[in-house]
Picture (tube, rainbow over the protein chains, first blue to last red):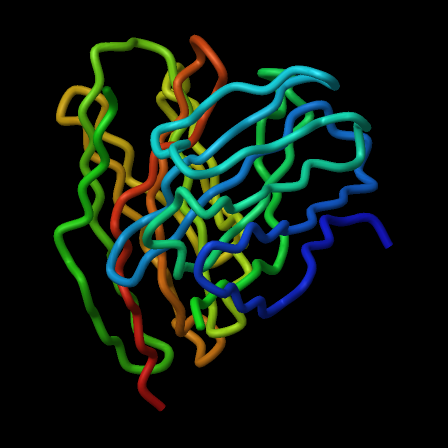
Length: 114
Length: 115
């Protein structure tokens, strides 16, 4: 089945710890995105990547880092510098072409702080 | 920056009835895309419908249709013959055609379909 796989579904972080959220897609999409969702708010863009080995900061990149070494993978690291990491994190991908630029989402990862 | 406003935090509708969710946006651009996404309790974001700003015809997908008023910067979603499975959060989103084609989301409307 084609799709976007996020893991783990639930993740707990201890204070001062870095944690990494996985996002893998087999849709052959060029562009990938990370969003954060807090209660009562819409999704906010953390980072995005339009091509392998390149990525850009979104609106709330502070305290996060990403890499894009393979087309299929776009992991997000929540660093200890992110003081309020508890949220629901969604990964998305799209073809990157304007003609059909629909973003498809994974099932999300819920991150909580211990 | 683009802003998207959904002024109805919660709505409810009787099963089989029709409901309209409101969305307004602010942009200085002339060409863009607008989307409605559904987020059921599973929290998976699912695309409901997409509208291209250069098209005057309102998009329709089965029981879902939009009322796109470009001059008023309004993009409402109409759900006809509401079903229990329509219970979800609904997010309106804007995509610019310049730059990185990122999505800007509203804060969502929680829709409950009552049996």
